[in-house]
Length: 113
Image (tube, rainbow, N blue to C red; front, side):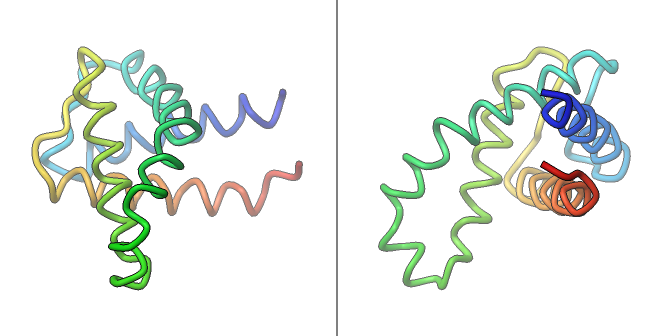
């Protein structure tokens, strides 16, 4: 449970940093960032596997690069679902999702399960 809380905090701060770095990601306050981090985790656990299964042929043809598009789509969905967190467009969604994924992977190297 402690590791889950740490990952949630790291992803929340990654969303805050992404909103500062990328112009297409707008954040109004700190609370929407942490709500977005929680919802992003839920969407990645529930919706992402279904989308990956549905788009498996495209994913195979693109050698897995279509996963970046799916990650951007999920990030955009989270931005649409939360008031105070907005993702404006395809490029900010994909770059923001990629940035948060990299931060999460780096954090996972230091967090022991």
